[in-house]
Image (cartoon, rainbow, N blue to C red):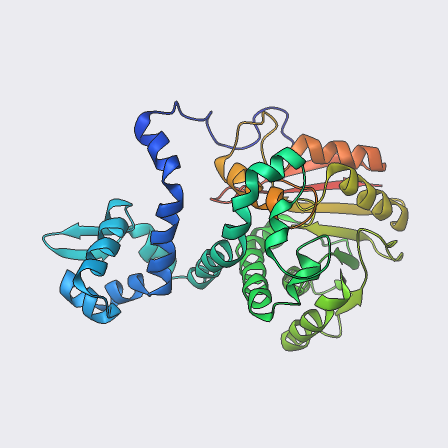
Length: 355
């Protein structure tokens, strides 16, 4: 489907009142309640207990009374727990999520936000003023972007890749569902990380052969996941810096999944132009990631996620709008872009364009 006006099913942002403003003011504390609840397995214990009272919860979590009072006050007032007649239960949205494989993916995202994103966000104002990722200074090592520094900190690298796999698994269910690759035989996954999207697409499209491109330091992880999948006959890994090196030829389609939120629009155009040069006539390029709307007023998830991209990964990036990506595609030479908006709590979308 092609959109020309408001680009998601969201309504205009609500009028802000004082309770809403105070919620923003103390939003960091709300996240810490979520983080502690996940790290202490609060929701699992509440679900497991026949009668989840304060005493039984504090016993399970090995918390003293004051600490339990603080945690339960926060989890209940924020709506993550519901208290009725002295008995706690999980909110329906939490219980429903726990019944799916997405629960661990959600918890991996909480860990990523805390251990990777949180500290770098302290430099958000300066990152805006200098228009670059000032928060990267908080990660030791060399390199102008986060990805070249992570391998120097194995603990954080593990948190990062667990999150990236989980985030991709949350999203690529929709990628597989909405992206028609029935006429594609060879796909290039640019910046494909640990091959989570490549593997999902190869499983869904039996004719498809995929090559995953990523930096040298990532290839051992990528190859390991490919070997685990049993698809090494159709999914390959190749070391290549997608920003600075030309793309290999011989592919019908080039996929940028969760990549073009990292870089500046100029860098995006540069990579898309390289994709255009590598593709045959009639070849297609696919952009898959979160999108902001063309009006620049939402959705809120796109705004919140943009803080991370402003502070940490690289020297440019944000959750760009549909029309900004289409501008990059046009500058690179691509024609006939088609948008597919994906409903859900993350503002993901797909743009397909052709050479």
